[in-house]
Amino acid sequence: MFRISLTNATLLSVAYLVIATVIELLRRLTGARWAEQISKAIEGFPAGVLRFFRVFYPLQRAWVEQEVTDTQVRLIYGATVVVIIFALGLSVGAGMWLVAWVQRRRAGA
Image 1 (cartoon, one colour):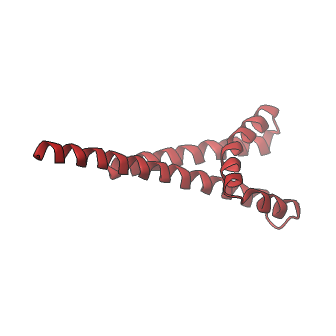
Image 2 (image 1 turned 60 degrees about the vertical axis):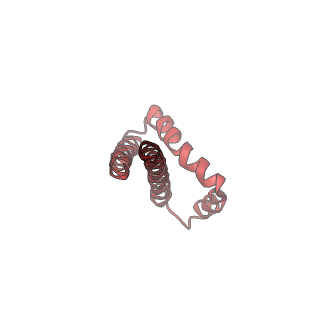
Image 3 (image 1 turned 90 degrees about the vertical axis):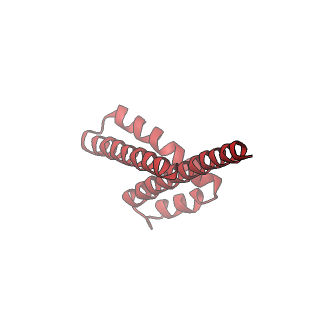
């Protein structure tokens, strides 16, 4: 169960990172408004998670004061999403393992 969950989490993480990278490159190279809007939408989820854990505002302050670069912020956002994807994958895997374990126990009882 865990292997399937981890494989899915890996594939989803890779897909997210590839799509976000392509959008970011398009945004930087073309300056297209639609790429900027998609980039903001992609950043919304990790920014919300960082807000929840009270890390967003210190990160924002560091960015405003140029202590971190745009690229570093985007790497932090990407890492945040990857951690969330793997945490969800592990929880789903653990839940599926628990269900299978309960079913085996009931079948044996």
